[in-house]
Length: 117
Image (cartoon, rainbow, N blue to C red):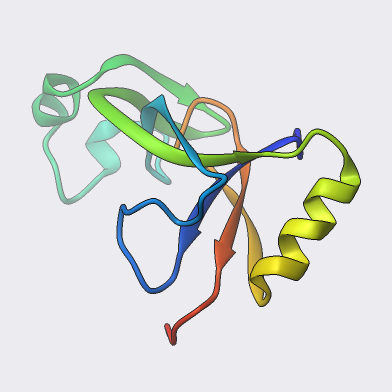
């Protein structure tokens, strides 16, 4: 995974611009379920699974589909490792995690400025 661009969010807000450096980009949301066939998914019928989304497939033993919502997410870009370290110092504490909600996994940096469970 590339660390030159990361999803970014702030604990205290939902969907708002997390920091001045952040820009928005479009992405395709990917719905992954932990079964290998829609008939094994108890919360939804096979017909309902195929009714929504595109590119229905099995990846790594999980049924997967691309949702066609016009979604956007906030991202921050780092030209060099020093930029990343500066960002962390400026907004610490931060939480870094892997986000698998799109076609390719990306790192996500959360500016941890409020309590969460």
